[in-house]
Length: 347
Image (cartoon, rainbow, N blue to C red; front, side, top):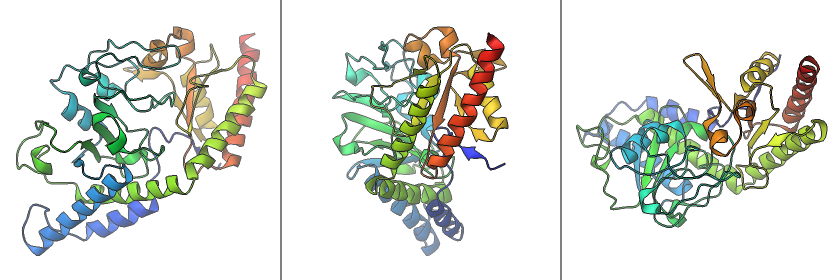
């Protein structure tokens, strides 16, 4: 069985450019903090990647602080700040904020004091893209980076979180992007690496892969790859809409990530759909999560006003640069067959 990977918002397959950069970095033995030739060679790899990420993110003149990923970036930028956010934020952000900001039925987060708030640029489950207000403290740009033509220098946020494995880089590396001169106390203290904001010997291999992936992702954007992906997403959406009675497409009518489709067949558990599609060779995600064996409705959909049954019946299909039209049509055909059987059993 030829499997089809449609879970790119969870992680994206490693790009060849990233793999090559990481293999080359393995032969550089120096510590980036060492002053000898080997150390300088390692430092050069880190700084090259820093420039690649800055250019791809439109963040020339900003500080790029490498981290282990957006989860660490959220802790670094949010811990102890008492910022406000909404329940549609990623759990890594929700762990540090007050969740009082209201969310509209269409997924828009309403912010009154941007300087005391954080707001994701794009939602991982629904794909809904937010408009960032002027003076925003922090934005989680993890899902948007590499998929949307954005530039940090034109954003209204003081800081942004990004992660390598969402755009074809390796897992375990990311960055905080911040306006130069921003005060950001270190959470990990020690040797003073990363401009004193994040101590510890840099993950040279991962950082090199991140830089190469960011550069390749920017090239894809410029070459219209994501416009093609959006076309395939729309083909899938139209195929499902034409065949299913009263489908719910979350975020339809709003600006969404070009690769993301979140939809609901009420009463058919998202986890069940994921398992059935997995057995048929398709990797997707559920709109609800499983924690310690207890199934709970999606906090994102609940915040948007969906009832528990609906919020527990959502699945997310997220495409990537290697997805083909054949892939989405095969998915649609298979899912529709299983949906028909589900309706027959439920009748």
